[in-house]
Image (cartoon, rainbow, N blue to C red; front, side):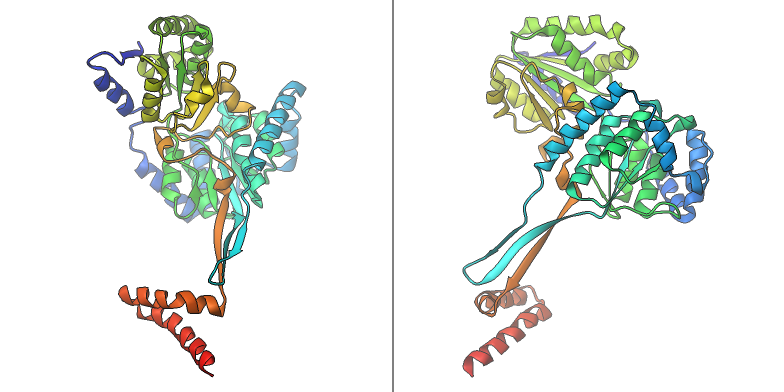
Length: 437
């Protein structure tokens, strides 16, 4: 059964802390296995990819068939029905429009000393996207990862998507096509991450890797970080719904279960100012679970990690929300904007009863790749910025160097860096000679 907490109970803090510290990720140590896979891919290249794909995905490949051909992609895309295509195109258009507004501007100015300063933005040259494969593949994740990269100006975009037993999701192929992906490879797991990071005979390396995956993929991303950039190490999904007593309990139950059906380790939390609402929502959840196709998964998630919290007022709800720092935060209250102003730690906020988080997973526009496991306290969801680099620019006039150079010489001396100081001093001496002529 889900945990029920009341902020007025004497043991509330202990229960709340236990919820915050509950480990929901796979505890098995996969680092050694992943390190061995990465080492094999680095040493053996395509041969390792083919062997590991046969072993884990039951699919025989050669270096020449690692990559989907244009004809194969076209054949899969042709299987997508018109209604599914229209929905995916709508999502792609909205995601593209939202992320286009995130493009930052270059800047340049000249200060009072005559120094011209600024910065410029440029995209990484190549990005790799990992997509879970088979029937569990998520075309929406392709859009959410690939479109921001394209909007940022990434020149080469690569996707690795496993196809266990040869099973291909046509919607993933269409999503890749709509996003402007250049290369699609039918490989997965830690070996796919290694291939994108280090390259093989058939796959050129990328500069940044994004996208969700299992514990092995997450460990691989962690281990290749530094060789390439990564987006984040994401844990199980989570939602926090804050509701007052005037909401529809069935709607809230569906919102909680929309997270629970993702994964048995997902977490669904309701904070409400109305104890009767908490009971009604709990009853609705229990009534709905048996009707779900993924009832076993949703039921396990709700049983092990579902939480109901009763508070006296919405200020208390906001304070608890900030401690949870949820991936998804739904504000089903009369004044969601006012409450949102008090909720400073959240990956994404969904305002009002008519904005279910599930819409955000697909078509509202903002990215659904978000920080989990309380990391919203210090990080943000995926955006165009993840595929851009900022380069600072500086140009000093002789007058500017004369004005600020002596301070640099002084600081270099204080740090014992003789050549640093001499590099500046030599120029200052020449400027002084010219002034004296």
